[in-house]
Amino acid sequence: MGLVGLLLMILDPFKIIRNYVFKPIATLGLAAAEEYQARKEKSVKTTKNVFLKLIIVVLVGFSVVWASIFLYLYFYYSYMPSVLHMKDVHLNLRECKDPAGDCKPYPTANVALTNHQRFLMVGQPYKIILNLEMPESEQNGKIGMFTVCGTVKDYQQDEIARSCRMSMLHYKSDLLRTILTFVFSPLLVLGYREEKQLVTVELFSNFLDDSSQPATNIDITIQCRDIQLYSAQLHVVANFTGLRYLMFNWPVLSAIIGITTNLFFILIVCLLSWYHWDDTEWITDIRDRYQQIVQGVTKVAALDQAQEQFKTDKKTDAISTDWIVDEE
Figure 1: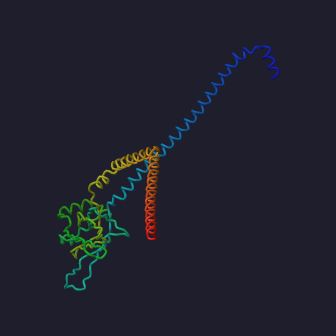
Figure 2: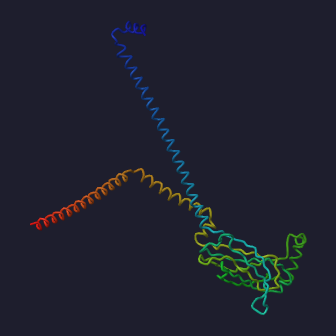
Figure 3: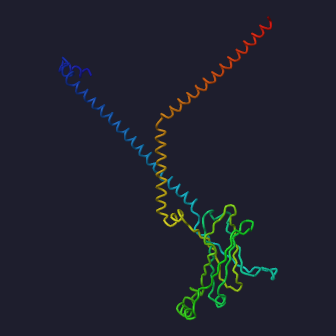
């Protein structure tokens, strides 16, 4: 440093170059460096803020979308009942202890409509259908028309609804039966096809369950003792109308509309909440109002106390006056 100072004294004895050349250049350079550093720090802070805001917006948007989807799914599974319930019907001949009475040995079965919980939704109309798998035998052909009855009962075995329907095998002439047997003979021989028909009997077209008297089982009776059956199955089909019909037949469109509606209302609630909590003036207003109420209550209490004190003092003065009068 001594050598540098000596050289500067020799080259610039009057400090002209140092004061008017080097010093302004150094000052300008330091100012430029400081400004660059400040801009860099500000840019970094701005980038961090933007990045954090972007993350918050993405998380909030992701949460809102999934909340909309969850709300729609919850509404769908709580509002939409099961479309189809299938129950096997095991028919047996009812034993009659008194043949002279009304009891007749018809094939009957009792089918439970509950499985630890109710599967019939209240207010939803249902179709109750009995599917009979019947062989195309000569005996079934001779029977012709037969009657199928269904009686819906509750827990106490009280009758809720009853319906009877008539049905029969689809008619086939001898010529048609011969042609079909000849055409499908390979399949019949190999066991891939059988000579049988599926007879569908719709017992109830619009059955409504009642919450005060819920249906628990149904009695099936085929009023024909000589009928031949392979199997029987009870189908309980939900007959959708209105909104349920739209949601069942157009699930994708209904899901889009439902999720979009939920998203719209959730966004409105979020925006209103953000605006409500971001604006703190309402907190100040509430605080001021509370202080006014407290002060008013205090003033009223003080005024009541002053009145009570005044009344007490007045009574005391009156007693004192009376005592003085009595003494006199």
